[in-house]
Length: 154
Image 1 (tube, rainbow, N blue to C red):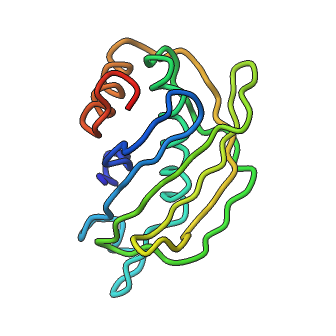
Image 2: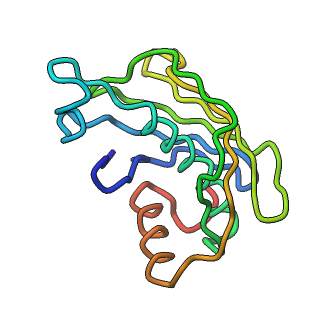
């Protein structure tokens, strides 16, 4: 996980090519965000956990459509934080598209810790839109390749 660059997914573990994905991410030992959240008791902010679930949901669509469109977080329909996330934790992010509409999708996602305990879950709406430019499309595609996507369904 590279919080400073908003790259919150480290590995794409499984993608069925249609509507589900499983990803992993390791919270860094140190990050500037922990200096204020909170000194002596670093906790990953909930907004970062929501973005992590949104990125996993967006990858479902982008991988299955060869990065034709970008998925942007549009609405947080619900989100629950069930436990704190701290440095060095390894997290599993599971996301499933529950509805695909004209120009958007809805996904349900959850984040679990290494012991399998759910630390957060959500229902999110993602807006689908053409990439602003080819440079952006290639940048996002390269992040997916670095995360283990091989250019085809896993």
